Length: 183
Length: 167
Image 1 (cartoon, rainbow over the protein chains, first blue to last red):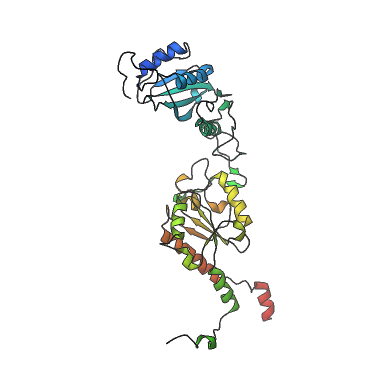
Image 2 (image 1 turned 90 degrees about the vertical axis):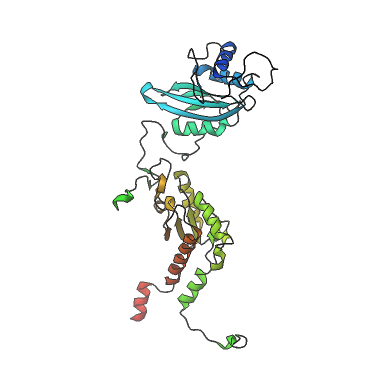
């Protein structure tokens, strides 16, 4: 990521990459208290942990604020943190206008994971959220069509959960096959 | 020597079964049905360089008039039931070629939660073509093997009836 040059010059729509510290401070001004940590993460996709109930608000600010300008949802995925009894959903955001990027992370309860949908902000979220629902069971409130994406419609369970046990068979199709090395 | 004026007088002797099978094996129409990367090779096989058409095999866009289904690619559980439905929509006699490692046994993805470990768990398979993916030559060989099988079939003879006829 290219660090932005200092100063506050340039118009609102000017292309200007911000470094993660500047993004962090800007977010602190626009939606105070929504960020969980005192400092942002580092790396290629610096992490910002967000209060789950305010993730939609933060996302809207990230997209609509001219200086932030995150116009692209590059990826949306989830992690089952079984030992912490939560599921973390990660949003990779990128700005074509400013050429900076970050990762939002929000945690939901593992028992009943609920998070707001991003489909109204970035239409790309549609299938990504369906996949996340399919494989991890996260329900995205407000999603227009939250059906399974990869697994069959009548599948039971969410395969990327750490405690998922693969059924013996599906509609008479055995899911077990003798190892070919033993033949 | 020209065949003109000689062929009309020529007599060929053969068995009815052989004649019928020869006609059937020379028009194996396969369904336009591709699942994954193997489907790209299947398209190549049907294309001008390999040209399955020279063996009488042409693609058909509906199972209702297809003789052969080439399962080309990774079969997910979600697709498995649909593949079975397509196979059941084909009229008898019908044949299935399992093309590539994924279709044969799940291949590279056989431990994945979403993958059906082999199409033979869903439909009966006549010819397995190994490879990942098989080259067009391999699929052509698979079709020739299938034609050999078709040529061996005995539709007009049944075991019980034949015994009766001899007796």
